[in-house]
Length: 445
Image 1 (cartoon, rainbow, N blue to C red):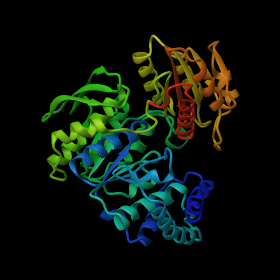
Image 2 (cartoon, rainbow, N blue to C red; image 1 turned 120 degrees about the vertical axis):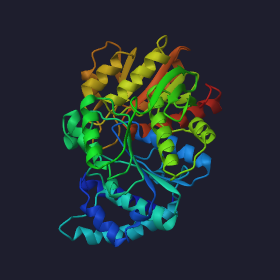
Image 3 (cartoon, one colour; image 1 turned 30 degrees about the horizontal axis):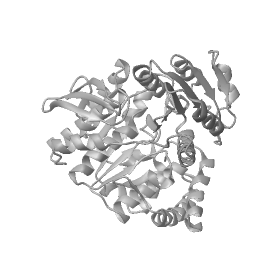
């Protein structure tokens, strides 16, 4: 890693001190100075509480399979900062990130002197992405993942060809409100005038909010299980099989991402492609949908790191994510001894998350990690009511011990904050490879 690149990324991360700054005024200021690059991008805008990243990766793989060059803007990154701005799954280079920071840093310093104040970390990265996809590395289409909420999120300056709202759950309530209707209102803020919108939202009160916003904007609304349908058929060793049905497509598909909830995300992607084909904005063949879905991979989503013993990581970072995870554990590992290594950010609803995991875990192990909002292991431990529980101050040592003593029918699920999962994966992979090289255990799958 070059010093110049490291300094550029450190400057970006230093802006975390400004916290979360909802609103579009700073973004509009930055983008005007940059020549409004966002106006020349063909984009799909994806919001929702959970499933955004998976829906992005299904769409990306389908479109790439058809031959389109596809940009993605996602957060947070998993292993490398550059992942946040990628083309066909390939992160922007260190030199490109450095070039982008050189451009944005001067504007950020100028903006800081105005009454608007300096841009946040996320606003800086969003501005970088717009400039990158419009000026440095133009692409056929860009998939923009909402950072927080929707209405006041910095990505919401984009004028998309399609909006997708995956679902609505009780997360980030300190910013979005403490009622489903309030959160749905914020998510529905990405709906643009006369731009079609697809949604997998299923709570009646949330659907009502999204329907009202769509009607106000004359935006055609396509609801899962109303305008198109998905039916889970079976789980395979490596993924899921499901039936998809709409007015123009009725067939089964297979995905290699684990969990019944992933079939819903895949259905949203299929519907998106159907609509854009119908509007002559894309030309994607059915074979590309099938092959793209099978190739889709999103790190940290029930990702298998080891087969003997079974070790999975899953970024279930809120109550809805934990509920999806526990459903997957119940369907796949009902006859296994399941140990869960868990930590989360302290601004989440911690007790409901721990309570959900207690239903499926034979043992709960709590830890913490180096992040400003990370929960303390003791705090999580005290919330747990099952007898088999422990604190692991050094979680990697616990994983090493697990590898040495795990029984054949045991499973370890490492889950919680995405920030923790992104830190944990490379260290667990390294541990597995070291053991493999020593002949102790099989390495990574």
